Amino acid sequence: MPRPIRMNTPHQLFFVTNRTFQSRLLMTPSPRVNGLIGGVLARALHRYDVALHAFVFLSNHCHLIVSSPTGSISDFMGYIEANIAKEVGRHIGWRGHFWERRFSAEPILDDAALERRLAYIFAHEVKECLVDRAADWPGLTCIPELCHAQRRLFPWYDRTAQYWARVRGKKSDEALFVTRYPLVLAPFPAWKGLTTEEQGQRSRAILEQAELEAAKARADRPSLGATAVMAQDPHSKPTATKRSPRPPCHASTATARRAFRGLYRAFVAAYREASALFRAGRVDVEFPEHCYR
Image (cartoon, rainbow, N blue to C red; front, side, top):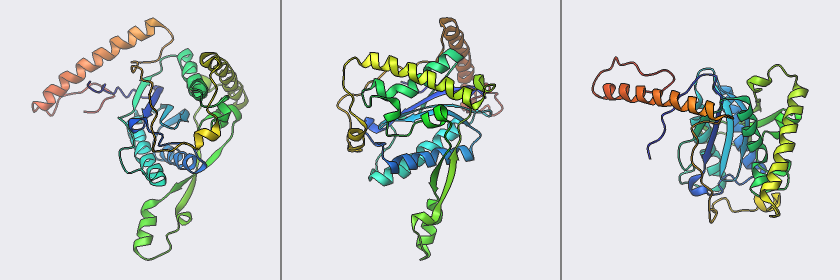
């Protein structure tokens, strides 16, 4: 199946997802893994003009809500995925492919759809019977920032400088090459007029409702529990993995979804026409806005 052509619209909110190779539990939570992933996220935000609004990292996949005034989400995600693969792969002794595919990114078209995506991020691990409460999840989640206004610092390791110190026979202890970056989340565009406390209240209300709905969805199935989650072998893979079709967008109305489909079809048609001319030798051809050649 061909990969969807990216429409990197500036300032658009995107719901981003990716899964580990063969759904293996390569990101099994631990204080070390959480610190490595948090450091990569914080360093990426320092390097790229991208706003991170929400996130959660499960053992074998992750979800983020991001936007960018320059449409540079692909560069941002490429950096995150490459460095998580290096850092976490080194820690758990994994040398093969880390990610199963390139990430998916679907635009979020309205505020109601945004709140549903945030609820999904908050309580996904509850619905999947991993923990009883979202706050019990031992992996990296945005609940401390969004619900409790916490500011966290995460370590970023300069592996290049560490390597050259080792080559030159100098001290190369990891602790000598660490910089701590703040993981700063950007408020959702619709929430920018709210105070920090009001944003926290809104987040906590969404979290509470999401937990109630997740508890109903799981019925009486018991949770695995944080201790058991952390004890899993990161090289292992589940016996079955849930798969669902990639939606073209996230919207609260059928009208909005139809309008986006029409817009996207026109974008793809223009892209393919330009691409055919470009590959035929027309170097001056104009591609549609917000895409890669």
